[in-house]
Image (cartoon, rainbow, N blue to C red):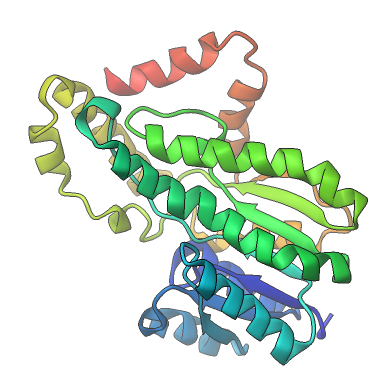
Length: 279
């Protein structure tokens, strides 16, 4: 196990940080990547506290040259690549009438095309090692959620892409999995960078529905969120299990929530559920 190498994106905080430390503790050689190496303090501190070593490198998932340089560097320095965990992503809040299509494209660049950039560059090496391609998506990749149209669209796209890729990759020895967290107590929500009160004030005819959604979501993150370490357990399962499932949820709540959609042939159960979130 000590010779196996995993590259993880988006490790500056949250699930990515926790997964990097957990994988290193499990005996993997972990290449922990992030867009801005200047934000690696928390990652390095967590590794030191856990008594593990990480190979910290820069990787911007939206920059194909950065992705290629990182993947090539890992293989040159370590001699192999056995797994990739696509974790980097960006949150987004908005609704179609009130935002530009360019804003939606930006969400897709990070959350969908960023995953493709990394996966495409890694696949030749994963084929060589009989490796694993793991992507952290979201329950929002299964159930569409109010005011998350662009974010859920990107996560739906990732799930569809990976579900379609999985049998093709398996024919060539690569295992593909997706991990679906629910609410996780991380910096993810804060990293959206929104003034929520200002967003509600500027929402026009959507203001009442947006306020209801914000109130519900803030309460969920404050009162019912998992820790990053708890969510990372599912990522580690995808990495280490003999025969990991294609789809893994990170909690009982996430399993129940996604189960509504996966058993909902006509869509009425999902819309009945999420309709209550906006009053």
